[in-house]
Image (cartoon, rainbow, N blue to C red; front, side, top):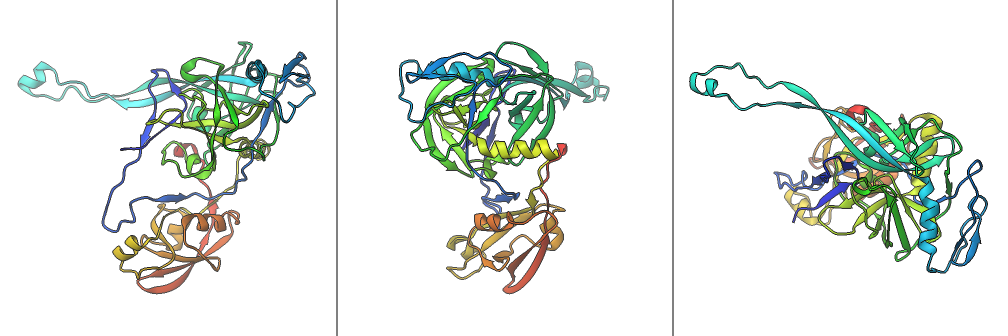
Length: 417
């Protein structure tokens, strides 16, 4: 069975965008399952809480029988799930959720059918002509700051030529991307508005599997849809190989069974207290109610750095790796029990390529530390900054040698989208 993963942006046609992963058994087996080493640091917590801030109207409500002032009060810990709890949380949280409509141009090459004259008499008067098509899509976002900064997914807005943000009160604003990060699949959009009901940041250190979860967004364009489920799992990693983003391989994700569909991307995943735990980003296309969200504190850290510096400097060496097992070792003529990580390939022109690492090299140590998995290599390299040198001890053709790789910046340009 082919595994499928879908980003949760809703195209105007309503068709899911699925990315299939396939496996190709080639000569050295090292082209099989590869893990990209696009390296950078990240810490994994979570928690936006949605409450109107100064400048917006104050309304009293109750959660679990407790009177709440949304301007000044954080939802009480240990809230009892009462009859109106979900509705009260949804009513408040919805004020900080936005709908994002985007338009982008795609160039295609026409290949018209050969006309009857060309078929009968030959000729080449009809040539394929490139033309531009406009593609519309819908996503979601959360108000990150009261002065008009919106947090969403990079894959929602990364290629957009135009962005329209619609607030819960139906006001519409043109949006502009002011920062984005492919590594975490997050972006910041600015609209010309103030005194918005921005999200209040919370904590999620106590988040557990089985906790209640609410998703809010615009599935298939139905804005401010609320769905309920639980936290199905934590720290999901390497769940797919998607061309649009490496976030699903770079961030330990939250898994939920709260219904998420195309258009939910960029919207919040909340707990029963109204705290946002994550930013919804993807689903398994071959399953039901297997969705994934980026922990909100990863988003908070990313957003703050984007707003402060316009970009995020992340360590990058450009090497794809495969963990070594006995079967692979045997195919490469290595003794059973050999420890290390195989270089499946290097990114052309990347730091590892320039330093001389080659396909088939066996990485034994990094900075003097023995490694037995790609994750261990990543963890060591993430301690470095761009411009520093990381030292690899590799085995090639039975000979050990040291290779110093000067770390580069993680690619984040438009051409990589």
